[in-house]
Each structure stands twice: as C-alpha cells, then as structure tokens.
Length: 397
Image (cartoon, rainbow, N blue to C red):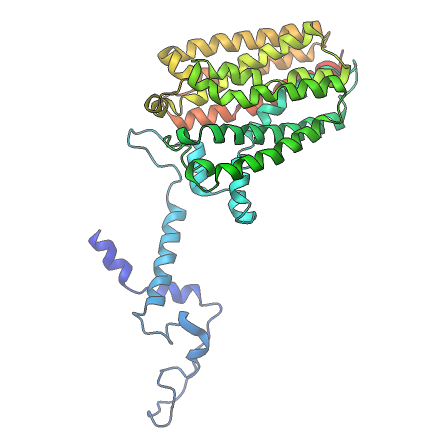
C-alpha cells in the first residue's frame, strides 16, 4: 500500500505526454533570452493557451495534473481487472451482480430521471420477457392451421404483451418485497429497496404499465381478453407466496405461463383442453426447473429473512426433483403435440430440447450463484427450440 502511494503521487510525464502528443503544441525553438526580454515568466511563450492540462503551464505537482494521472491510472486498472470477483465463501458473483457492476444500456442511453423506472421494469434483463413470451408464442403457433405459419401480427402483439406484463409483475414484486429485498445482497440495490423510488412513484408507474398491458389485450377476442385480465390476480398475489408456502415457484409457473391459454384462445376463440392443458402443465414444470435453479442464488439470504422456496425445500435433493420436473415437462409437450396432430419435425426438435434441459440439470453447480444464473438465462434457448419445433411441425402436418 505504501509503495502504491509513492507511485501514484509521482507525476507521470511520459504517460500524459504520450496521451496528448497528437494534439499538443510543439515547443518553439528560441534563443536564450533574459527575463526583461521575455515578459512571459514560463519557459515556453505559448504555453498558457493549453490550459490546466499542459505540463508546461502547470507546475508538475499541481492538483490538476495529479488528479488527471490518478483518474487515468484507475481507469486503466479497472479495464484490465477481471469482471468477476470471488465472494467471501469462494463462490463467484452472480451474473446479475456483474451486470450491475459493469452498468447497462439503461445507464448509458436513458435520461437519469427514467433510469430507475427502466430498472424497476427490468428492461436491462430481457430474460423475464422471454420467459413470459414463449408459452404464448408456442400456443399461438400450435393453433395455426396445418401447413401454415402463425399470424405474424398476433406474435408481435404477444411479444409486446409479454414485455409489458413482465415489467408490471416486477414492479408489483418489488413493491411488496421492498423490505425483504433490502436485506438480500443480490436485490438490495433495486430502485424501491434502495429508496431511489418511493412506493407512491412505484404505484403510479404500475398504473401506467397495466394500461399498456390492457392495450395489448383489447385487440383480442372477448374470450381471450377476459382470460388475460384474469391472470392479474395471479400476478398481484405471487409475491406473497414466498411467505406462505414452500412452493412459490409452482405458483410462479401458473402465473408466468398463462399465455399458453391465451395464445390458443386468441386464434381459435376457445380452449381445446386436450392440447392446451398439457402445454400449460408442461410450461409449469419447466418453470419449476429453471426457477428452482435461480432460487439457489439467494438460499442463504432467504434463510436469514425467513422466506421460502423450492431451493430450500429440496436442498441436496434438488437435482433429483428438477430431473423429475424436466421429464414431466417433455412428456406433456409430446402429448400436446400429438393431440394437436403436429408433424414429425416437432418430435425431432423435442429431442434437441431434451438435450438442452438435460445439460442444464446435469451440469449446474447449485453452490455457485454465477452458474445458477447462467443456467437460468439459458432457458430462453429452450423456449426458442420449442417454438421452432412447433413451427416446423405445423408446416409439415
């Protein structure tokens, strides 16, 4: 530490000279003059025009020169240092913490006043939108006529609906959990938990978000619109489940996959239970896989604050449990496709989805938050594989 201070306090002439070499002036070669012939007390007659960053204008030990060198050194050190730092227990930090440390597009491009609201809606973490969107996109594609692609405008509408619904669900969650989030390392910097936004501001923003959600439901038929609004009960009550039951991930599955019901109904005008219910149940089991893995990031903090999760309930048996949920998920997907009369490519891609899910479950390190987050985020690819499976299966049917 002592040697560090010595090095830092010495002005770096070579470094700053190199940095400004392209734009700095060149000293004028003049013959030696006396003080009376040169009214400028500095060695170089044109030095003043370069301001405080000129070594020839400033004494070498002035604060501005020192401050510039110090800032430059710190920037070089931060750019060359690893982005992942071990925790006290030896585990790596989670992906969410790394993103927070590095910043996001929100910090770079949005006005300061808008940044807390964008972070409250998790606009910098699109995985939530993908997990909301895939079940509705599956269902919409599955409801398409044999040999035809699904309605593109319907897919776009459900994409925006997932974006707005995911943001509203995050706002509700953060409003109800702000006291708990303040005690959890991973979530204590969220806008409501940290006090950047007040509860009134959060509620006002929620009202705006729900209007956007309603705007994506109104173009649908009445049956689908009522079905969509009915999911709001699940959205508002989900944050309470971690206080009441060991299975909040199952309740999340009922809420986040509601689009599997709406997508088919938006195309057909009603629900076919033989196709839609197996699809919905498969998505719920899928959620139990990925959100149990996700919950292992916070299991130590959850124990301290007294909230419940399947990660705590399953404990060391987690991989056995999520393996079972994965098998049920894929079996129900196969049943749904069979009842829908879908073509053979669907089952080929189902094998690819099986491999992706098996990779998650077999390789996840449940004691490493970074790996848990990595496996959780990879589920956007599982959803994409199943969507492609339904597209090709429907085109060939």
